[in-house]
Image (cartoon, helix red, strand yellow):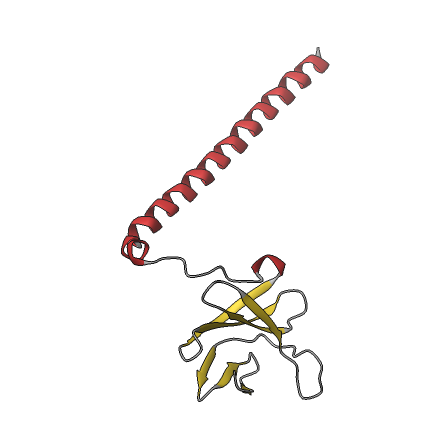
Length: 142
């Protein structure tokens, strides 16, 4: 008799556990849907006027973009960031057609520059790059 009762209780527990898990998954999915719908409504003005200029290069290989600037004189975008594997500072130059060049930033010693490269700007043809160490780095002319 006891063996049969234990099997029945285990089946009930498993059934309720499965129902609870399914309920949590459904609740999570509904929450995500509500968030996406809300975001689409809240930012409708942006979506109505925005268009895709280009894909950010390097995302699939671990690039973490931090800064973006448009250099009008050369009609290019510069994207600064770092790699999520080794924190090497990287700069991408993106052409109007979507083509790009990857530039690995190196220090005065010739070694890869390890820094969470952040904001970027251009003035007088020089690139100014903010580092996570509180310093602003000036790179050679574009």
